[in-house]
Image (tube, rainbow, N blue to C red):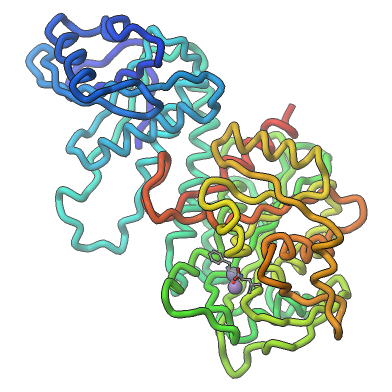
Length: 491
Ligand code: BES
Ligand code: MN
Ligand code: ZN
């Protein structure tokens, strides 16, 4: 999607969108139209019961010169403290127009008090909602093909271009994440995930290091490797390092990259199993965040680490009851081979801490179905051993629109993971399943490290279109991590 900012409305064919706040006089917002246009717009607002609720639309056609122009009045609601509002409004416009036949959208915010940042947010939402991945659709009908190609935001005040540069970088990261998440597991598996990360990131100056199975075995990553035993696709550990912040200690992100999760020998039911192609959404978000940070040359040091494996049942697969020794030296009884994400993450986390000595480590994972039972599809679950870090992530969540909600940790949960034969088991009781999964991971957090775990099982994929995404991959986490770095490490 082409995005530009302008002081005045252009000539020619386009659909025109006019945002309206709850308290605005509609007439004030329509001063750019002629008398007949104002009458039609006001009538459309009335007839369609347009009450300016956030991201709602009233649509009509007006004549301007010798063209009939599609006009969209779009509500901004009544609240001004809703931080990701403008993204949603932009997204709603694209949602309406993407396959409408219109090729160009002009959003006229003249007369509203939009600064450059707000204008860029509007454009970001509009562009994010336009992302599609149609490479496997060879028979897409004409009417199903997207037509919208260009967005112009008019009247947005100074600084829009600079603000857009940042947003465009986030958008590039978001698109990369969505692509990784959307691709099926016969296309994206550990080796090809690494290839795509290289292709996207090396040119931007991101240093890439990859550990193969031999290297991981030498380091004692038997927990991660155990998950991979049933698969013919060899596992990989991918480290992506962005050095934009001098000699500051890096912030480390760790992503769960299970490129397909059958459950292994504790096999999942057939119904819906195809969705487990996106069990690498945590790794996808980390790779996309690295792309965003490197694209905009963030003034921070960040390392993204992805534990990449495929979890398959096989004669060589690990069994329930097996005991593995993790890289940390702690032993794990594998009660359920479908609780594999934590087995992958624990070794990736240990390696990350030994290798980079971070003060802050944040992992992202589609870790538990129980997370969806708790929070549905609105918030990612946030677990942390540090209130300050948790607060910063919650704040970045509100600002970016990738919302997180804090969940508890504690000894009572932790002891549910004790095993009679090993240091811990990988699966506890059904109740509080996301929390015990988090306490499992916490056992691998080293002294002094501020750690947060984001269980994003409900956020990676959407069964229906949202404000910023169509059905499918959401790209959740990229904007969150970017905001978290921008607000706390680039000052
Ligand atoms: N990848 C799944 C979690 C998941 C399930 C994410 C559904 C998104 C939608 C994870 O590996 C898993 O299977 N977790 C088990 C853990 C259990 C066996 C302790 C779960 O949630 O059922
Ligand atoms: Mn699983
Ligand atoms: Zn999984």
